[in-house]
Length: 106
Ligand SMILES: [Zn+2]
Image 1 (cartoon, rainbow, N blue to C red):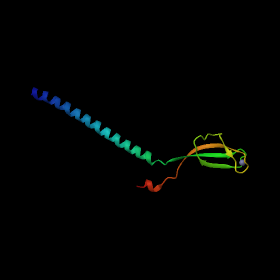
Image 2: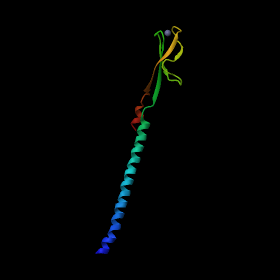
Image 3: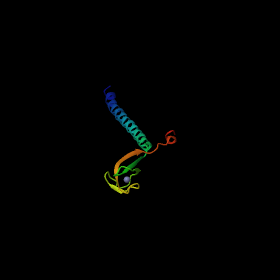
Image 4: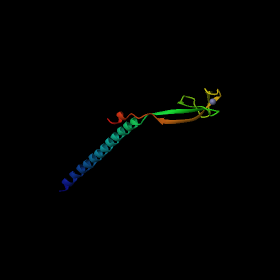
């Protein structure tokens, strides 16, 4: 009787040990799948575009153009095509590019 109990204790420890490993593997596996899904959803986010709004100091001309390196609000950008005064960067903002519906419905 005593021998059997002594033999069962290492077996119980082994079962607990292996179930702990199993739980760890399942959790790790789920975390891995969630991470893959997260990466996929990040890839599906629409690309962003930075837009710079330039306007004439006489308020007769406004231009929206793509952001160029070195653009900042208040930067003097060049002569106004209408009155030849200076134009100034008025706003810089980020907009999502047009979302392609066909790419999402796969
Ligand atoms: Zn002007």
